[in-house]
Length: 309
Image (cartoon, rainbow, N blue to C red; front, side):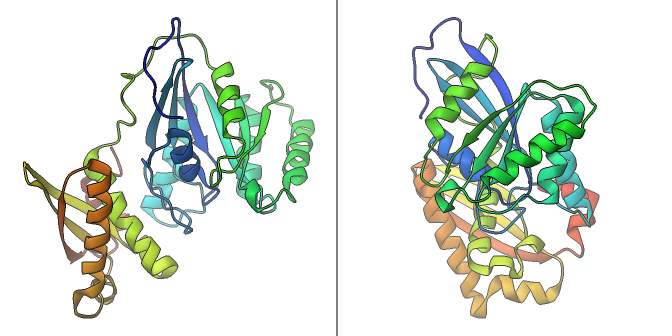
């Protein structure tokens, strides 16, 4: 599923917003489709904080996916911003990929997205992910859609296509791509065919660092952490990257550092190794920690961190 050359004419091109509640596997699905990592993943909900555009170019044309933050009950400025970004990405797309977790029963957020699609008449493809964990709940999602469709008096865009996939094993992905290419219009390519993403490099590096903390600390602290990349110095010997870790209070600073700074050193080493593999050059990473009280509700900090681009 990697990008290929010699695009046939006329190509097809379309923008697809990947939406759904938190932690249904949207980022994992996008990475699996593209065959490369452009969006970080973790078992913790709300890992993705910004819309991320991933571009798949094939002889059939170009699919531009917008990976959106998972919708959730927001209690602070960053959370409300993430929800708004997800809704805005959906509004500006050719159609919607509503991703749901087939391994669990439908939740209120799933029902909310279905109601929104039915009310607005938005073109949609419904994707049941994680079928490698079983299909027990698949009928519940289909029944929920049918019940809501019968209740809805709003205009309908027709019966949506359903796909059952596993982003973890790639089962069902070829059929999903066939369905997506069949639904986008004939149009010129929207991006150069060699482009995989237009996500800013500094933001991607910051996300990789956050991902390492998610993997180590799990739900203990990561949502209180933000990362700002201060500089990337490039030379023939490699990259020197300096960055800043933000936490809400002094007690969290000690957790992020670890005993004798051991956790910070571990994160720097693991993130630098992954970045070296991604960019195919030596990477040296140096981070420091700063306390910024309630940074997720601070507009100037959110701007600086790139959450309101």
